[in-house]
Image (cartoon, rainbow, N blue to C red; front, side, top):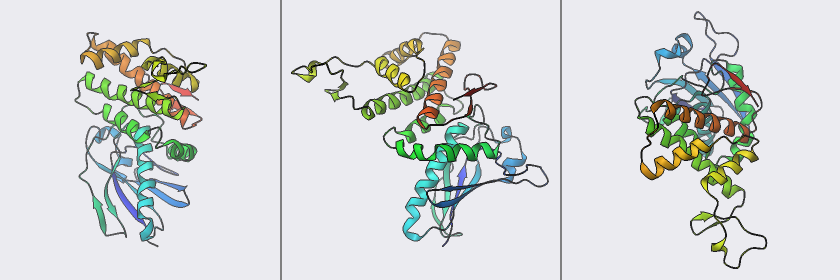
Length: 297
């Protein structure tokens, strides 16, 4: 059976299984997911050069090969590839997407104009270590796929990657990460069975009121606090709530740029840790606000 091959953009991990030298780069990760053998092969130019060479550019960097795919299973191969790329986007904080798809090899069945930016600012894990990348994907794969649709992980991870694109006003970056928080809050409420009535999530009394529309509403802060506590995370969100309300109701905020950046970093920290927790990741990860330090879950 032929292989399903995708040329992909913007992943700057130096993925090598055994050694990484300029003379003989070994730049491949081997995975087995959903009964398929999958190879992630990094372009040797990415392996040999420092990430800053590709930083803030659009570049074809990687190849994902799903082995032994029948004609009737192409859509399934696309699904597996897309979810691998979204995990790579998340851990690298870069916009990793397919560009050219071949099936069978040598026959282009799809092509997209490369877009987005390759970034290497603040990865979630050490993406230059092939073993760490491989272990991460294998560890979270089952849970990630289980909650993928109901928690809108595609949208959340896409917004996180886009928020770090260069040349954006800080307000635009803040709106993107706050909307990602909104996604997570809303999908948490739905997943928890909290009733959504007349445009609001409701706190149902005991016994319930005769007219359920009279039940008290959950605020954004209520639900976000509940979501974080259920994941075993501390709150510390008062300033984020105030900023969110200002941006959504006024469009701008009067706080200084330094404070905006602190809030932006804090939101990334919250989302990063929360996603790792709900995907049931165990291990070290890198703080967004302090990329020189590691945290542990």
